[in-house]
Length: 259
Image (cartoon, rainbow, N blue to C red; front, top):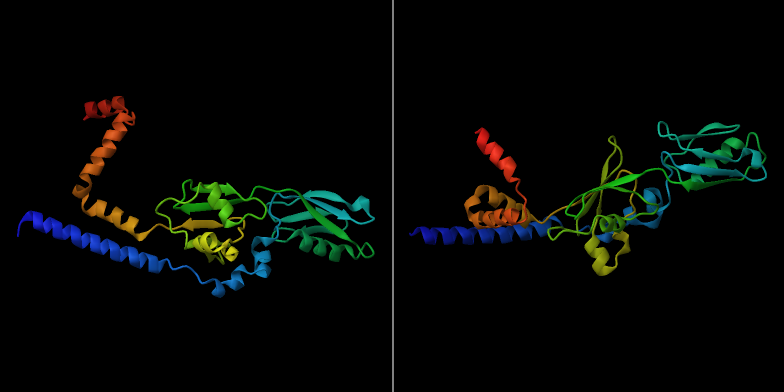
């Protein structure tokens, strides 16, 4: 058998294998069924997961007490313990609560000093909160979390998906080191079927990962195992770098001179 025939058979086997891996990748990245995830994406659960604003470190809060203007304060949530200090009652945990929940907690403590206290808590200024996005988007990195942000907001800020992205199987790593969990979202279902339940609310510290297609992983492996097959591609990249001035020829000359 000639070398040409062997090469053709090898290429055919690789292409068949690539197609199989691509299909298996689609199966592996099967999107979550919405009816199974309603407990995660329901409006009631969304309130806990970020559907209502959760107070965080360095947030500036306006605390008002009806008919007691002398007790009103503008306070900042301390980053070290997540608490705020108020007259009469001292420290109150604010981090992780909604403004309504904090108002109820303050009211409960202040009831010892004020008859039927009516408390209102407003967020004057948000502290710095970040979320992170990695994987197949145009601009990976950390982004400021705005009030009521959902996952589509973050993907849009990151420039959208790359051609190798799998938007049907996005993973959100959420929680602290002691109790992390993964929430899945299917943005294909959101975009093409108007399934709003997949547009998950984001929380401070969320890490969003957009996976890539299995065929791209296979291409990377082939470049490592069969670099000669991509020799023409390397030449094209080299030519493009030279034409665009991508090489510092003085640095190359210095390296050559030292050897």
